[in-house]
Amino acid sequence: MARVVIALATRDFDPTEAAVPWDVLTNAGHTVVFATADGTPAACDPLMLSGVFFGQIRATPENVARYRRMVASPEYMDPLWFEDIRPDGPDAHDLLILPGGHAPGMRQYLEDPVLQGKVAAFLANDRPLGSICHGAVVLARAKRDDGTPAVSGRRITGLPRTMELGAWLLTAPTMGRYFRTYPECVQDEALRALGPAGTFEPGPLVPTYGNPFVVRDGNLVSARWPGDAERFANALLDLLEAQSTT
Image (tube, rainbow, N blue to C red; front, side, top):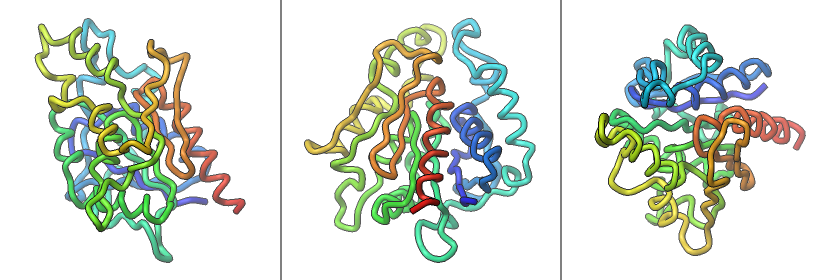
């Protein structure tokens, strides 16, 4: 079975985007551990459990239950440090997962140079890697040894501009910039890193849980938002199964 590591922001990560892959991969028999910047247990964005915009934007009850099970696991309570993520060698992790989240606490994770270095190494070594939502920002900021974006020329998705701006406009009167992690949209930063040879696929214009969208480019799997999480997790499961037969 594979050794999987989920990298988390110390606070404000999206609970669905972490818990669904954890649940799917754990139930398939894989070993799933966690990593944070300082090796302390992470805390999700609490508003994604209670709900915003009159309770309309929140994790589903099923995914809240998955999150509760995940945070009770011994692996969650004793995470690795980012520096302990292993992209190569005999004890390498078989898959690195980058969940997203949009609240202010995510900046610590998105800006972490150690995590960016690990992501660059996974890409350089063609190791399985999964990114969802703002995880695309970590992909965009990971650099090769020569300083160029490690994801340039690849095909990915992430939080589309339409979804990011739409959520912000709906909630701005009461929540300000809660849905705008940075002035620049995720899609725009990703496009710049991908370069002219790369592709950002925004997926269907209207996001729904019944119409998930995932992009696979070799050993890199990416998705847009919590509504894609189930399909994202199963695409990662398929990727690991394909790896085990090669």
